[in-house]
Amino acid sequence: MGKGGEQGGESGEPEGQSRFYTWEEIQKHNLRTDKWLVIERKVYNVTKWANRHPGGHRVISHCAGEDATDAFQAFHINPTLVQKFLKPLLIGELSPGEPSQDRDKNSQLVEDFRTLRKTAEDMNLFRANPLFFSLYLGHIIAMEVLAWLMLSYFGTGWITTFVLACILTTSQVQAGWLQHDFGHLSVFKKSSWNHIVHKFVIGHLKGASANWWNHRHFQHHAKPNIFKKDPDVNMLHIFVLGDTQPVEYGKKKLKYLPYNHQHEYFFLNSLQSLISLCVVLGIPTASLTSSPSVEDEWPVHYTHTSFLLHRAQCRVETYGKGTERAKGRRELQFLESHWFVWVTQMNHIPMEIDCEKHRDWLSSQVAATCNIEQSFFNDWFTGHLNFQIEHHLFPTMPRHNFWKVKPLVKSLCAKYGVQYEEKPLGKAFVDIVG
Image (cartoon, rainbow, N blue to C red; front, top):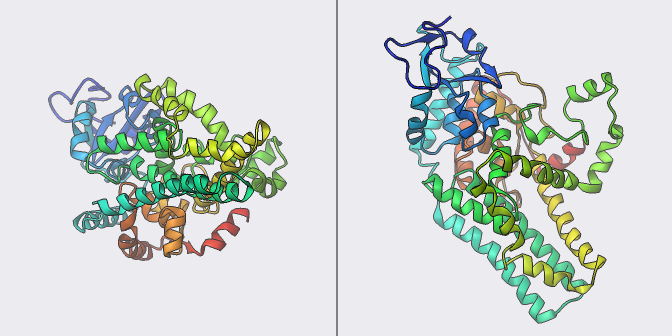
């Protein structure tokens, strides 16, 4: 037990002498109403503050009772600034005899990974290239302008509609990859600038909520492929994933759908229905747990979806009326959802999906992710998510620098026998079905 017990709480720093805690005691505080975590050997009580956490209360709760040092460094581009929020939550530190890592994690591996991160910082790999993102946004706008020009020159018709559907689908997917960059704070040096542009891109170009995306996606990054912690593997009983979930469903005789054929009905909607359900169920939940000023903005963005896309879609749908127009909209959504889902799932679904195993940051991220071979097309087609391992290890790193840090990551994985998986694009798609 630590000196001073559980005094100190949320009110401020420990008074008088420092309070020391063992890992055994800290690990008990991982409940919904009682959350402690450790950052650089300092112990913090985040129970009450979790609901005010900008990234959502769930992501910080997933690290309760653990060493959250690497997660803290991974998600914050200015840890020094964030320390001022942590200071009032400090209740003590690890006892001198306690290791820095919990649950017998390989301390040398953890230290080597942190050294690798420091090396990447010294190489300026966390500094974005403005030209890259300017050109990237430019090519999205260029596709939208091309769509307008085609409409003006060729008018409406089946061939024009098909071509425009491909162009608009491409621009929408690429806008999705771009909002992902801003959402991860990997473009600007200041978090506020990233948040502002992220709200614009995801709100105006995608018609979704930045707040909702942040709260779900950061959970995924904190605990990828972990049941009850990663919302991306919570498939609402539509699919069963991994090796253990099908067994559990079998024992409990749960059969909401014919799971023996899920690899077949996956092709029918490619999770499009899941995305819709997540939007319907997830956004109201985010609205209830977030400030109204944030969530009240996105429906306006959706209603007035940017003139670059929304009005172009309406023009595309003018080849018919009523059900025909609805069909045109569905076709665009169908194409986009297939592209989005196949790319995002090829890095995770074939990997290990299981319950919490309390691994170190490197091991947990690599176990749940894989890379796709690099090429100019693969980089563009996937929004650089073919470097999924590097992205998960360093989520705030600008994507154009992933290839530079990749050799260092592979070398570290080889040193400790951590499997670093990389495969061709085609095989990655086949493995989803497998």
